[in-house]
Length: 298
Length: 305
Image 1 (cartoon, rainbow over the protein chains, first blue to last red):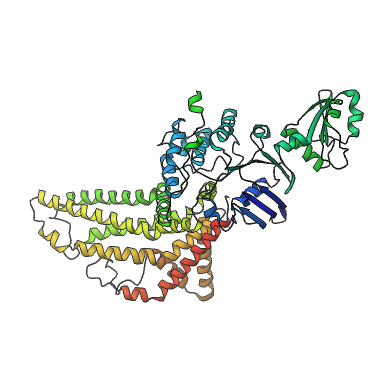
Image 2 (tube, rainbow over the protein chains, first blue to last red; image 1 turned 45 degrees about the vertical axis):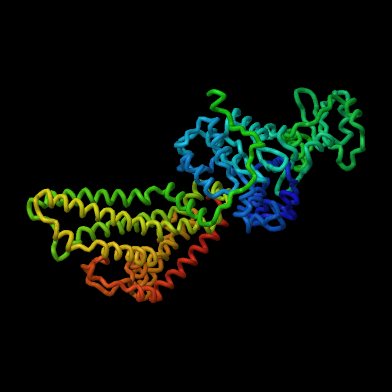
């Protein structure tokens, strides 16, 4: 059974179409990055998955309909929708008492263990904690829940770089194992690059890229082209071109229809070849989507 | 900032416990109600403060009064000061309920914490019922407990003052039947201050789950409009009287009594059968149930503001 399975998932707010019939399938044990510009439909997709909004089309999360079975689903799903949603009036001890009181899969001792490594006091109220500490607290609670699916919507927004780095490190080292699934959206693309197993780009309510990180390596090439080879390289139908200092950097999609199946070594003759990072790939895919093939996005 | 304090917690994966604990619906309800009390401490602080204030002024008044008269206890109405305290605490309960209900489903959307609550396995039904239980169950029982405790303290203070001034406490203890007063008070609170005004509180909860801003205005405006239209069209005040009667707990729970009689007066004859048979009660409860059902749906549909 796939962890998340959607077919023709559609959501409109008035006349604005937030999700335009997307299909997606996330298998158990994956870490999926859902990346897209503002207003692309990322949060809408996550909200539908979490049962926070009604939707059209088919959607099963852990075999359940999230809209009608949110309560049961939340026994196996955790989410951090925003760093700022822990109620400000609650005390740390009350938060632990409450979650322990209502959540069948919460391990209080574990949460206490996490908190012991921080400076967060049990008697503190959330309003008295710094933003980074609130995230530590929320994460300590979430990580003490033995969930099957963890959904993170911009989990590091507004945090300083130390906390952001630790957030993903502890997520990988202490939480993730092959039986859990994680879906994360973020604007800080470069931070999640080495965390993800799968990547999905979403734009204007549609999925424009859906592949595993291994596929990215085999499918996309970024070539810093020798100036004298530029004309030859452009013939190969790059999906994106940008200038860095006085060098042209071309990005190729080897699966692109119309592109001759050329061996990678042939690209090496054109210049320095490497796998593009997600940020550059994102810009390339988005600008080719928008018909701006010549790197106007940079 | 040292690395220790900055560290995001870590824990070995193999230590995970797989077996989920079984949590009953009653447990979820219990913790949800406790949660409400943590968030809205005015639910118990306000009546406690009023009771303390009443006790202090009562003590001062009898100490002052001792020089003029043996004790300011009217033999015809020995329970008068006790009734006054009960009445004060009832009014406090009404005020606290109104403010609580208007914020209950609005505040969590305004501060976005609804996203956190919805990330936990507690249904919208449990949440709404736990919030409705505050004005309908928790506050009446709390008012009862605090009132009885205050009245007993008043009795003890009176006795102490009487004994200290060398007078007999016999009259005080024989003229008041505390058990009867307490039972009547409990009956009155549960009928006239819980069941009877239930439609008012459930309406406020519904509006607090619906309004995007200014829930107070949205809650009151339709009532004022209806009363105004009725006044203009028929020159009557039936609707205003109806709502007002619900609000202050003017319920048919006792045989009609004089205007100076308090519901806990020992001479009062309670009429639970009459109360339970009154159509107004059941129409009101039906309206309350409809409001709560709508509030449950709204909590599912409405996100943060």
